Length: 431
Image (cartoon, rainbow, N blue to C red; front, side, top):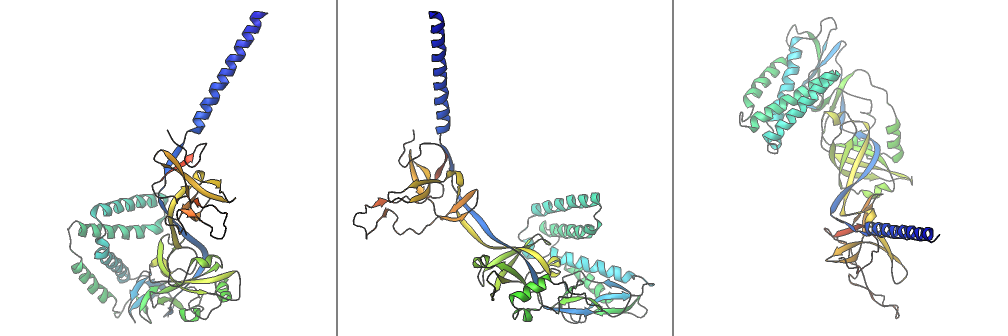
């Protein structure tokens, strides 16, 4: 019997010692401090909406019936009375001169872009080679998927990159001689001759940028009319589907300055101001377009305003933009990035609560205050230069019994912040 009791006692003691050991091991593992260095971080503030593009536009009247063959790509600058398109009898078909003229226009565009010194000065031969490899990869993908509509664009991009490379490596200084030959041939082909296959031509009524796309908004909204429009007018036009006018071949955009009007939530309008520089990103182009806030239209509605953005950047994608979703990058927040798992709350002597982090100062933990300028579910940005009335002591001169206390210093860039651990307090020594 004594042997059984002794065995039970030894077993219980062993179990107790084992549990005691596991407890201290668990406590050690969970009391270990983990640190990370806090750095500066920038977060853009974005606005989302659906807006409408406003331009100075003139419709180009058609000159007959038949097959219309355009001589220029969208966003091509044309002079007044320059030929825009040829109208052919359906039975006659497309003339060889027209096909050659299209080739000339594309080659002139590629060579002009390739010798642009503002672009070439920022590009090295290695960077151009990487772009060429990217385009070749895209070309293989397009060929495999059968997306024939992208082949011409990729061909033009590749030709332009190859020409830029020739300049970058010193093989050519410019393409002035080739451009002179092409311009002479273009002038000859643009001159109608007796017996031409085109029974009529369409000419630009005004100078500007040509687009073959028109949608009926050209006469409904103009920059002059925009300045007199109300919030309801803008919202109505965005939701409106105008009828396509008949008897036109395209339109001329007479100014590269254009506007984009976007209804926004009244609260979000506080993020922008007149004259502020922003960037717009459209889902149709996939790139950011620099712009400025031209005007903010307020009205009798207490829920929305209309922000009007102004830009002078134009391209083949942008010239055909009308009603489109947009992301506006209005401003940026820059501060010290602090992960949410590093933030702690502690009670102040006056009964309040302050938020901050514990940082390693030598071999001592110190509590540092945070001053949020931006927050999301994962982290916040703390103001690197907070405006603190008194950086060292909190003093209430109106309360005779109030004892001054030392305020925590704000967190600084490169501080070593505790992200996990237990028994955290200001002044804790770290061995």
